[in-house]
Structures are given as C-alpha cells and as structure tokens.
Length: 232
Image 1 (cartoon, rainbow, N blue to C red):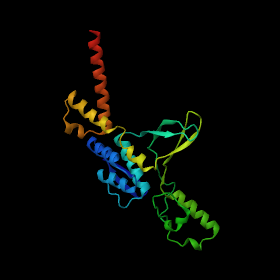
Image 2 (cartoon, rainbow, N blue to C red; image 1 turned 180 degrees about the horizontal axis):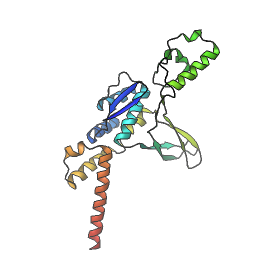
Image 3 (cartoon, rainbow, N blue to C red; image 1 turned 90 degrees about the vertical axis):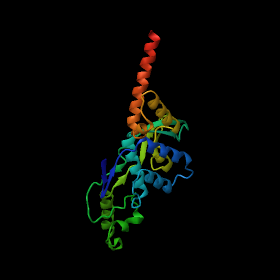
Image 4 (cartoon, helix red, strand yellow; image 1 turned 180 degrees about the vertical axis):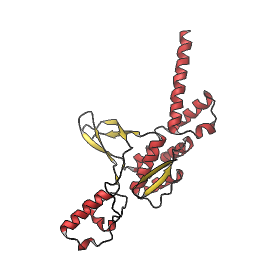
C-alpha cells in the first residue's frame, strides 16, 4: 500500500494484479464510448472511491496506479502533424500532478484546470469588489496555490517537428493501463503454468511488472536451454 497525496487529497493505493489487469483489458476492448463514465467503471474495478473527484483527478490517479503496476514509462503511438507519419514516443507519466508553489488556506482548490471565468469559486470574498490590481494579484495567488495537472507532453518527430501529446485523452488513459494485449496476457499464463509450474491463481495474483520480470527470465532460460541443445 502506497500513500499518494496532493493538496488536501490523500489516497492509499496499491498496484493491481494480473487478474485485474485482464479485467481492465477486456473492458477496454468492449468499451464503445470512452467518456467519464468509462473512467468511473475502471475506478470501480480498482476499488477506488471516485464520487468526490474531478475528471482531471481521476485520470491522474489512473496514471499513478498504472505507474506502480506496469511502470512510469508509457509508449504512445502518435501521428506527426507535419510529416503525417505514425511514430512511437516514450513518455514519463510520473510528473502529471504538480504540487502548489504556496499554501494559502483562503484559496479553495477545485482540482481542475484554472479558468478565469470560475475565479469566484476559488475564494469566499466577492471578486467584484476588487480593483484591477487586486484582481490580478488574486489570479496569480490562485495559480500558485492550486494543484496543477500536466497532461500535455512535448515530443519531437524524426522530421524535426515538435508537437504535444495530450494524456487527458480518456481512451489513451484507459488503454495505457496495460502494455499487453489480452492474447499476450493469456500467453504469459500458459508459459508460467507450463514451464514454471505456477498455478493460475499464482499468476492471477502477480503484479504486471512482476510477471513481466518472470517472463523475461523464463524466456532467457528457454533460450539458453535451446542453445545448449544445439551445441551438443
């Protein structure tokens, strides 16, 4: 169990196991509408209470749980807006949540991207009573006092074009929770039960990163055995 906190929020989270990963992959394959309801369904699968969270928080939380279950590096396929070629980019998802620069008890954090038209929701005082300088100072104070979510990641294509990949894409977020297809997961069940004599329940309870390590070790062992047989 890991304590995960930002602003006034605090969660106890843990990596999901292979059985849960498989359930998530099946859901993502069957999902026809990747909206906030789909995000809520994934959080329910993970046993997370989400009713009080904004969409930004939900997505950031999923990426955090993904990072401790699969890894902090996420491979994303994206099309360059310049050359139109599809490429793979490796993104670091460990820095999505940015903690406030200052702590101000008078500022109410809404845990979503700041919009000036919502400024009144951040304070109890009447913003209409402020003069222009006070108003500008308040905006600056709010921006420095609230949690930010860094969903935009800069990437550079081989053609030299720089552009941004938006991790706030719900489909991308849900699909990122597994770096394996359903077929690959079942193949790992087969290999670990057949060659390493684990039971299905054993594999079910493994964390994805743990199972990946065991599969890599197993593949290396099989390779060495085959090479040894060929040399005889």
